[in-house]
Amino acid sequence: MMKKRIVKTEEKPSTSSEARGAARDRKKGGAQHHWLSKRGVLALIVVLTLGTFSLVKLPELIQHFVYVHRIRVPFFIDLQQPADFSLNHTINMYLTSEEGISFGVWQTVPASLWKEAQGKDLAWYHKSLGDGRPVFIYFHGNTGTRAAPHRVGVAKILSTLDYHVLVPEYRGFGDSTGEPTEDGLTTDALFLYNWVKARSGNSLVVIWGHSLGTAVSTNTAAKLIEMGVVFDGVILEGAFSTAGQKLTMHPFTWYYWKFPGMGYLFPEPWAENKLVFATHENLKKMRCPILFLHSEDDHVVPIEIADQLYEVAVKAQNTERVKLVKFDGSKGYLHNGLYRDPKLPDVIKNFVTSL
Ligand SMILES: *[C@@H]1O[C@H](CO)[C@@H](O)[C@H](O)[C@H]1NC(C)=O
Image (tube, rainbow, N blue to C red; front, side, top):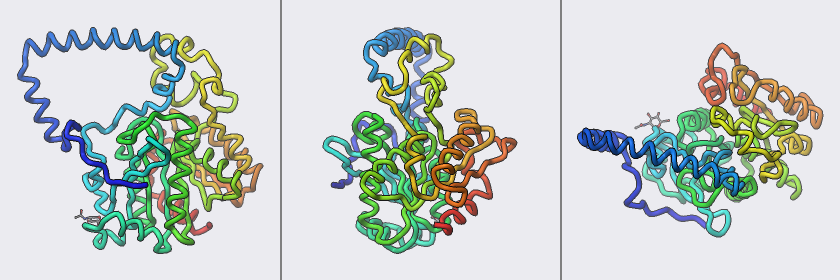
């Protein structure tokens, strides 16, 4: 099921200083470099134009616009070296959710184990999941990898609270194989959940979804409910909704709004593009404690959406089990930054204690 992947030699330079050195060397090219970059721009225009037409012909390519999974931010990183991001008690691994799909996961142990964790292997890390401490699974948003600073930031908070954290990379993202589809992402999430449950004994297993990850989380919850399984608790940060919204208004296409022809590229409603993300419907079915976290100045998903989703969830359960914590718009957290709030650790701790 699991393997350590061999480092490919043609991979990007593993340190940013190496990368900078290479960039300096390239600059020496002078005039020739200038000419090349003109050619590069021309080639880019041709590729973009052709790309636009094939997108109309091949709607499945729309997935690239929704998931933006091939944009690896930050660049020049080695996802096999989580310690580079100062999570020195983290190990990298790969899981296989179905044939041909190998996805990366970072497992961070509680901070109190950091010394003990030095030099330990996968077996030690996996065994630690059964030590009785709560385990979090963090499903990240679209664009980039598990190394993005706001994702590492959440993992650090949870580890400092002395919880275990697993941060998977969906299929097609980062160093994971395959292509992202809504069903595929749910399959990976479900697989990881079951994988954790097989190792975590009676410990709490809490799900944290951010942005696209909130849809993955509620999709997974809905799937599990069909099998009679209920999550212990779910945190939904920056949750979005597709109910009653046009695809062109969708948070994951915001990046492309500035390009002309959006209406032409996305003429179909959601479901016909194989994107459902039925968070509304999922929330009606869910029966676990839910904590919504949303910043009032979220520019990708307006705060009103959080209010609407909260209402749906409260109606399905009650105000005891469903909470919404808003973060002051003056703090400038926007869509990704609320992990920086000094009050967040207490909010999380209280939620976990309530489970
Ligand atoms: C490793 O992580 C722990 C806890 O997060 C931190 O206190 C410690 O300073 C780190 N050690 C090193 C050598 O970076």
